[in-house]
Length: 340
Image (cartoon, rainbow, N blue to C red; front, side, top):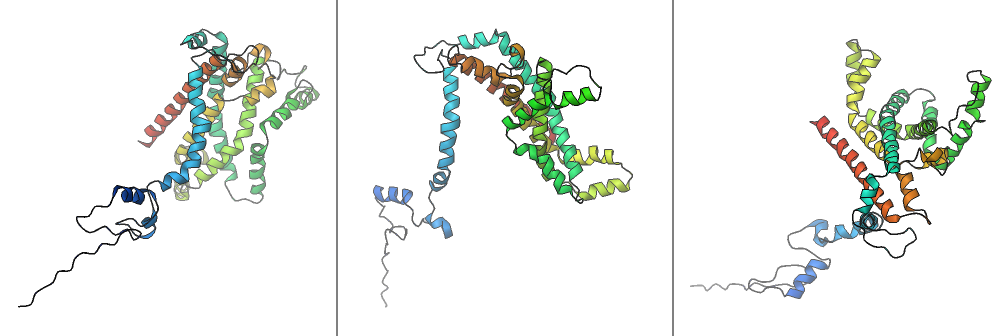
């Protein structure tokens, strides 16, 4: 009778990461070290041998830190300030509860600025959704010299908003190029008050926004048009569909997601418009401040070093955030309904 000898399990500890022998649990310190320090992980292979749960957070830490410091903290601080009577240059501030919001709801200047911002978005957004699309359709084809026109349409995007505003001031002034040309062509007798009439200032600012944004959103649509199957256009053309019909029934449905994106971005930008009004309507925001938008009004009531109230300006900022959030949620809902 041959006696069989059973080999005792041998445990190898430490760097190789092999589990200890049955019945011998690793110490708490060793478990913590294995979870924190890079090293072979049991049951893993390849690059995952040296991967730990905190490594993805390590790579994203700089971006998260910037978002918290420059985004989350300022937003929370603005909400807190909206319940105080803080001054722009600092100093003692006391809690006033909902007084700033009550004042805002009864402030005619606030409602005027809200009307201008909403009107700005209502007029500019539909035009910014469709005009760049038609521009992209025109420059989509590979024709001789088409690259020059694409670059020319995109050039305003590269220019500074201040520089563009100064250029439009020169064009629209009473003795500017537009009025001078119209008078010499005997189309008008007196100069059109582009920069002194409140409604014309607002419309001129909208034109400036459109002119500067057409090239930017044209690039969005060029990318989206590349995903529309050419076979659909060829089949529709063989069935007798004209250019306009193919545009509405093939091109528009094919780029609908891009249209939703452009509409959302444009709407948010319109609610935040400031530079165009400042450059064309001067620092007062038009005659008597009639063309001030919400960002312009926030600057006037919240940041003036003498008469400003940072608490009230913060309350108006919260209202602007709610309005922007509502627009974003509406666009998201429309997108979901379109997908369904």
